[in-house]
Length: 302
Ligand SMILES: NC(=O)c1ccc[n+]([C@@H]2O[C@H](COP(=O)([O-])OP(=O)(O)OC[C@H]3O[C@@H](n4cnc5c(N)ncnc54)[C@H](OP(=O)(O)O)[C@@H]3O)[C@@H](O)[C@H]2O)c1
Image 1 (cartoon, rainbow, N blue to C red):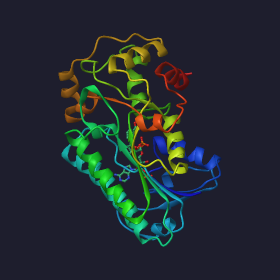
Image 2 (cartoon, helix red, strand yellow):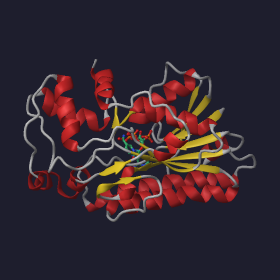
Image 3 (cartoon, helix red, strand yellow):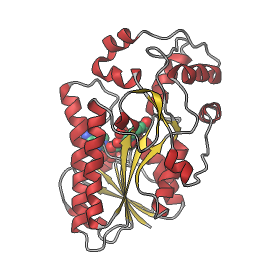
Image 4 (cartoon, rainbow, N blue to C red):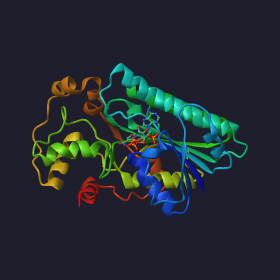
């Protein structure tokens, strides 16, 4: 396949590129800064510059391509000032709109458009299980995800299959939430945040990449997909397991008000959660490489 990958220089994209290139796909990586991306190991990957918001020469690459994968977006892991919140929203909407615009212009359109999204779509759901049919929640992240998804869905008007990856915190060895969470454990001061009872719908990065590969191939997979492991855990259970894996203590939870003082509005993302269920993946018979948390963490830290 010829695959257009936007925002593929990051934590998920780097691993995805490795797998796609190994499977002999031709990958065109759209990046704002080609000089900062090092892909010596993958000569079949072509770097193309875009500004992630307007049309340009890059759009020609979509004509005749088989698939578009869009992972572009400003990080959530920075204090949410009003400027940063604007960047979080606009980067996702603008990049998706530009890609869908290029799909519209293409004479030979891709058959699938795979777009990022997040479990934040559902807001805070303290008790109920959350399959893909669960309604959206309230709050900043729900708004961002809904707007991001509806921008992607516009590709359906061109007859393109659209998949939206409602992803939970992705676990991997060189970045993402786990790197930040593991540091205090390594320093013997690790503890859950808030009540510890909020759900923590994790997924191993290898499964994220395998599900994206599945979505490329399976023409009956469409719409939102909960991209989380089937092993639901709370923040406390997650942190206890992290401590056991790293042979470190897990101390009593840090009170919510301390997290709010330290992180401001962004604290809400850590203090709330959802028991997200990967219903669609289970329905489609997807077999998780790392369905259990203890195995996933052992794999990452061994
Ligand atoms: N990692 C997780 O736990 C997780 C969970 C749920 C959802 N997601 C979503 O999945 C996507 C990929 O996640 P990731 O962890 O790989 O993210 P990441 O490491 O932050 O990479 C995202 C990529 O987006 C591009 N980007 C960054 N800021 C941008 C901006 N202001 N405007 C346009 N493009 C920008 C960058 O590519 P260039 O600099 O090359 O342009 C960057 O490499 C993100 O949209 C994220 O929200 C991730």
